[in-house]
Image (cartoon, rainbow, N blue to C red):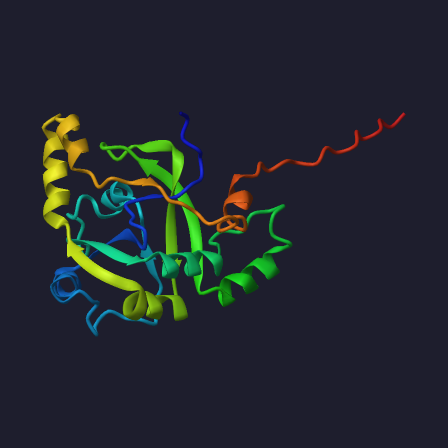
Length: 215
């Protein structure tokens, strides 16, 4: 079955969804140890969460980029995740879908969350035709993520390194068996209508009337 270009794929249970982030050890280690983000984690700044393990590996270089050495799997409530999506706007202006740039910028300033769709990645971290959801949380959403929605935080840095080692050794089958089981997320009806439909719809240019020739 062909993979739809825009949909959420994630490790999830009946009440939670797992997202990924990567931090320097001063934040990541105590977060995993205590099961909550430490005070040094700034709740007034935007934070991006990613349901795709491989997209996180692309972003953090398998946990080897400076400042992203600790990879976290953060299990949050589906209720909180869906609240953020319902109150999100697209992170980029799309001509023909937003009324104008001014109204989009106003929406962006007011929305506690934003969404962008980036190419999903394979085990070699090469882009795939379908997209992966990135969800940015700010203001109320960021605070609720850290203090209300988080159910558990697990350090998965060792897993990232193990999968990377198998990929470098050419054993993609073994590497694939270690990946989190990310399946289509059971979206409530209409959850992404204001995000996915805009992102998916084609941009069409209006045909101009031919310019009459001057005799």
